[in-house]
Structures are given as C-alpha cells and as structure tokens.
Length: 175
Image 1 (cartoon, one colour):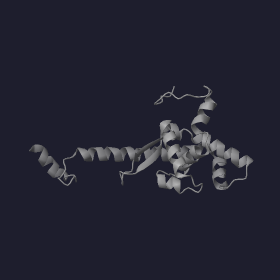
Image 2 (spheres, helix red, strand yellow):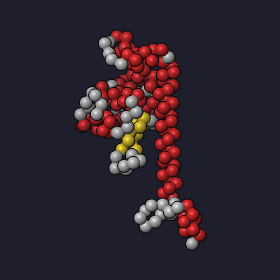
Image 3 (cartoon, helix red, strand yellow):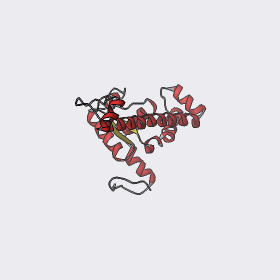
Image 4 (cartoon, helix red, strand yellow):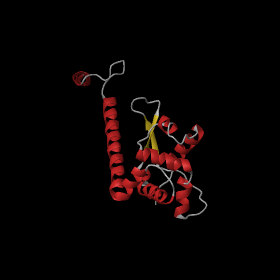
C-alpha cells in the first residue's frame, strides 16, 4: 500500500473514488498532460498553456499534486529561486490512463490533435514506452546534475564561493 504524508479522509475506500479525489478536477489532469507530453516544468510554462489556468488555481493544483506524490518540486538548476516541477514514478504511471482517456475522447468527441491520437492508436504500447523512456532520461539527467552539484559543493572554495581548480583543492587539503 502506498505511503502518504498525512492520513487522507476519503468519501469511501473505493479505488475509483481515490483516483477521482486526487485527479478528478480538470486542471490536475491538464498539468500532468503538459508535464508528460509537452515537457513543462516551470510555473510560467503552465501559465502560458492555451487553457489559461488562473494563478491561484495553478498554485493550488501544484500543491495538491505534490502532496499526493504525483509531482515533486525542485530548485531550478539555473535559478535556485525558482522551482521546477517533475513527475514522480507515481505520476508517470498515469501514462496508460491518460492515453486511454485521449483515445476515448478521440473516439467519441470532436477533438483536435488527430496526429497524437493516430500515434497512440497505431501502437499504444510503444507510445507509452516512449513517454516513460523520456521521463527516465530526464530523471537520470537530474540525478546526475544533483550528484555533480553535491560533489562540487564538497570541494574547497575561494572566498568568492567559486570552487578552486582541482590542483588547488588538493593543495588546500594537504595544509
């Protein structure tokens, strides 16, 4: 059974009810879609999406998705004052569900992006595998960047805060 940060009071213990309580509003699914298919990470990217989510709704849904473990926030590597949002394993596991929802809408509603629907219909398993592989690559890059940052912060620095060259760092360790 999945761990949660706090006990969540649900209307019932029905699995469908749990899913709807976490993802049942329009905006949460669109945020997950933008992360999964468009690679959105920043607050600004979500704000610029063509559905035009209000700032207060976006902030609320990001907090809610983070609370439920669908996404996580991490500092932007280029600007630590900003956050990037990334799907967790629990979030990327929504790929097959989202695919089925797109295919259902493509079969029963008048919708755009027929190219995407055709790709999904043509080889659903391959499409989902590609989405997951992209997520795995992005995750590996973030982990590598974190490891590099952690290693760099362990190196002796000048008074300005910039790391010393490796040879100077070795010299400072001998002293």
